[in-house]
Image (cartoon, rainbow, N blue to C red; front, side):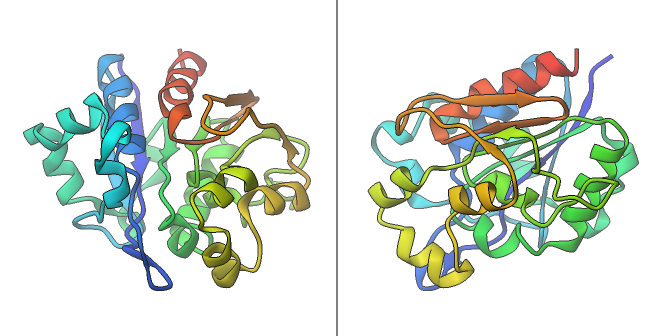
Length: 229
């Protein structure tokens, strides 16, 4: 019996004045990992509807085979163009969640009440929670049933300070949030791990599965499928 997975993507086309959106590969690659496993995929976002794509993810080596396939896949694009608003999602209808990245998540994942509620209910109910690159920003305000930060004591990863510097987004992130993703994870008590920049790194710790960067999206999705088997 295939699992039902909630694939969450950002609705935000900007961080300040910087154009952004979902990093396409981080939605496309997991989508195909899940469908290959026989899973039913529902794509959801904070605002619902059509999803903005970071144009940087559609150039050069970043524009992967999965990304190209996704854009020409009628079923996938139907879900992507008509994403379900998170406020309409019923957590109990899904077996697990996977949050994709893109810099847009800094603006609409961190303080998204419906997303926070879904994650906390899934975690409390023993369901796996997975995310990749900037997607794990959805965990920042989440708490365990005992009130502690959800990240506290968990081995975890997220886009590194070094990688943020390389894409010249440190200033924009700090201006919006006042912190970087890596620093915030450490502040919340996460047992932070990282590979060298642009290398695949997926961390599995109990109910939490996190991936470091775009290169980690397949490994993170495959780890989730394995964990749910």
